[in-house]
Image 1: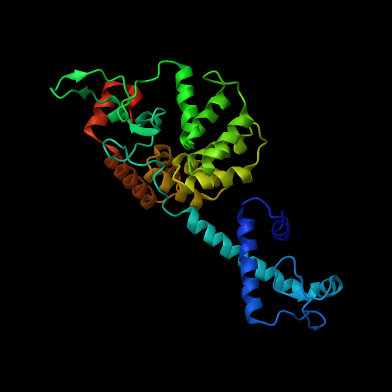
Image 2 (image 1 turned 30 degrees about the horizontal axis):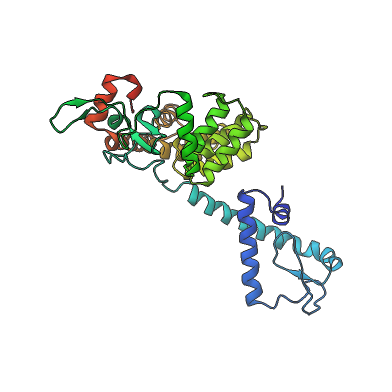
Length: 339
């Protein structure tokens, strides 16, 4: 789709939109400074000189005939203006894309330590909607006399654990009514996989993931991006849309989506951009990104400095998430291994 088409048609969110907005803003400024009620071709003045160039929005004509007649004279200036606007829009997009993202989750609400990235390192509680780290979820509970007591309850709200799929689904739906995006995302997974009594329905899953993402759960965008990248969840393969949704997820703190962007850039031969994505993902705790940088370094595509910085960032992440309680949980059960 050309820039002019996307400006006219209001295309989906993409880099083209940034170009259109920038061109329109520049055009607005020029209209405020210059007398734009003059036909660029014949020089006619008036309030009805409003037939603008569809591409750059920088010049006006009194009618379509004048626009067509002036096209060859304006073409070079128009193309240069569009090129510059596209470069500026791409630069602004990259500044936002490669900015250090926020963590995907808040700190554990019980121990107040940074939440581990790995799924084994945390558990969502449908009873209260809290994400609890593996250490707090596993830790024993004692009464006021120091005696260990029954720990078959949520460590945050003390609700007994669910005992059936029906109870789990009931709690999830209740959280959905409270507009809990994680519960909505999870229900999408149930539809995607056809589990917990739900029929497999990829389109329903996508609908729920869109809803979760709109409520602020950036990780849901990664599920949508995966669907478009592989064409396996009710949609056809669309790499452009996949990149768009991966970027939204990555900017929201999803390291898996960030890693996926690195893989896509690497396959496209854009090693520099791939390394930038891997560096951010490694600093967020995604060990596979660290491995990719190490491999690129071994083949001479990344520098020693790149690998050193990525390794230091990953080690710093490990220092932030480690605790004695989490180590004890991991030692007791492999399903609690958080790194």
